[in-house]
Image (tube, rainbow, N blue to C red; front, side, top):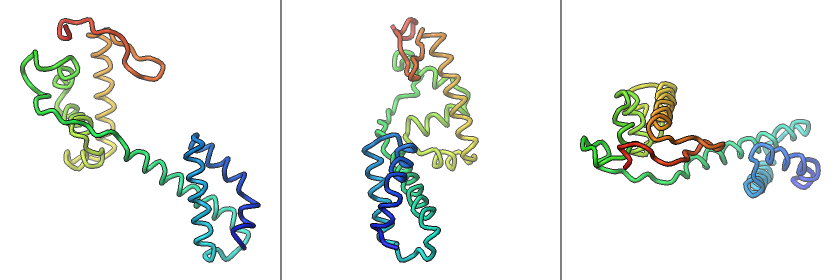
Length: 173
């Protein structure tokens, strides 16, 4: 079987398959192109023509997985502040105070992942807990922090989950 024949038979279906998963036309085009490059490069591996479609779509699924894996790596670097956990009231805003007030197991998790910029699997190893346990701690920490913000600072969350509003507490003034 030739690459051109595979292209004619599957290109349209494959493109929309990728687009449905990625939901971004530019990324879809890149993944689509990478998929056909790999198809062309590894064409000799396919021995049964009836399995070509499954093989092509599996390559596309792998490329989609690579895309999402790479997307998660491009997170803006977090600047580390040395005095973030200061005991002086004037040195921190409500956010720092709320983090300091978290129970130790939650505070450690948040500090490693969001303050020091560690990946979750690294933080789990440092804390000697499972990745699932770390994720649960972070989820609980976020819930506690959201509650503290809504009580103290009169902040609300918009439809996108972003904090909106104005600080209305003695710590922020």
